Length: 427
Image (cartoon, rainbow, N blue to C red; front, side, top):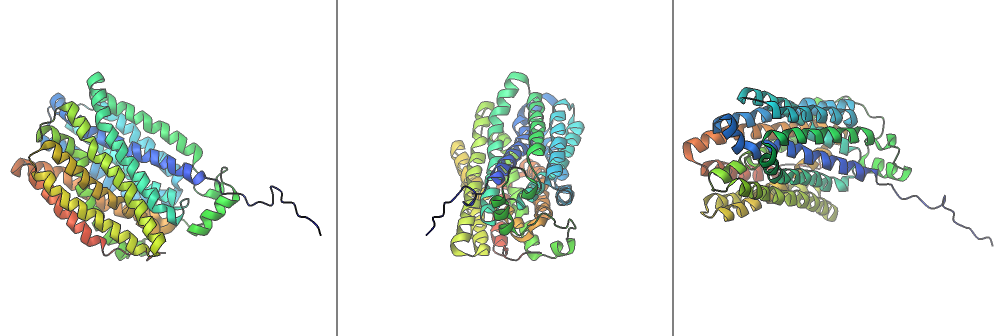
């Protein structure tokens, strides 16, 4: 009888964790996107005094970013699917970081509007390309959590921005935050291009066990066609339902991203320092909603084996929660209570985000970037309409009516969420 001695070669290697480093880099990118877009909202009270902009003018400047962001969603997603996430994401981050910094040198409404439009062009590709970049790396049971984590990071970035911008403005003026935030993006793009590869097979830090785990779980292999099947994509009922649902979300969240600091300063009577603190609280609550929504959806899918139901129920719960709590946030006479109710409302809105961005991965596979770009186009059409319409509504009816419109759209989002089928793959 012979004894068999196990050597290191006989023990199956544990999978490496390169996909988690990739996820961490994407988390960093999402933080930067929202730091760069929320800095203007935080600086609005000072910019208005310095450059003499009216509320309507500020609304159009906000909208300039959103229109650039909406118009270039599909081209950005297509570019990511066409040339891969490594090159595409590096290009768009460099582009928008340059225009973030150049915002510091604008001198009137037109120059700032043009700069923000071009900034929006660059940021348009960020989420679709990042989604495409994760599609070949994240396991199906990790996707909801990954999307929740990345969007939570964006809200944390947004929450950190108001107090940071106020601190920088007090010391150096309103132009300095734009210049510094642009430099952060340029540094990130260098790190991304150095580390990321479009497939696990190309990456020197993945072992055979991790490559096999990813490929067997996702079904995506190194040699895949780059032709985007637009006909299949545009005929998908789930895509259009998802896009309309995301329109409702985009309109609603934009109020808290672009106008909430101004609302606190103008309508609720907070001074600049208080504004910086209280404006960050709903966004921190939103970050918790992002984490919870994506992870709960994944857990439900694993436990009950019903991905369609898991995605629907979480989105439904989030929209209903937001619709309900916007009402007391709007009508309470207590300013601090209004912020707390708003925290719950934004938490509910953000619960839907991990689900919304997981669905392109669920139904689209390697074409997730293109699908996400169509969805995000509609979301940002809502965000593009929101700032200008709010400015006019406030001028005509005061601050309550815009928030009531937001609550109604959350009800519409809840109804639409019931019609999404995450099990029905496009290809």
